[in-house]
Amino acid sequence: MTNFSKKVLELTKQIPKGKITTYRQLAAAAGNPKACRAVGGTLNKNKHPIVIPCHRVIKSTGEVGGYSGGTVKKVALLKKEGIPIKNSKIVNLKHYLHEFKC
Image (cartoon, rainbow, N blue to C red; front, side, top):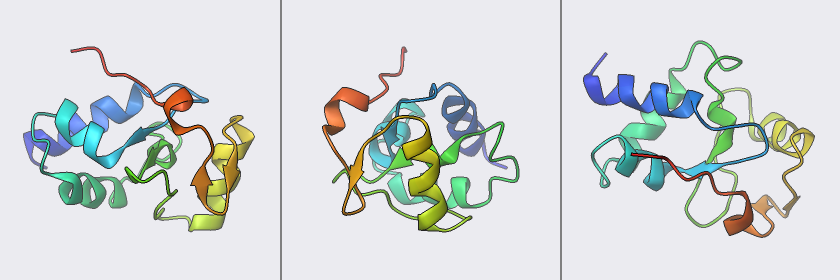
């Protein structure tokens, strides 16, 4: 596993319940703002989704995006955490964005 991937997983663990981040924000916080797809690839291989809550990472457009457990499960998990979703998009996205502290 690359250092970048390790950083992505470490940062993903920091996203609190009821908050989300985007693949782009996570890539930037991990040190490479253009590596959105690499973030997705790393999270797709996440073997510990309970410990590393990759369901809290979404597209920059506010769309929920993919999840190894399926999009329906991702939507259910986010809704359970109090994040409103309509037509597979986060409602009031900015309100729920997690800001990484550098």
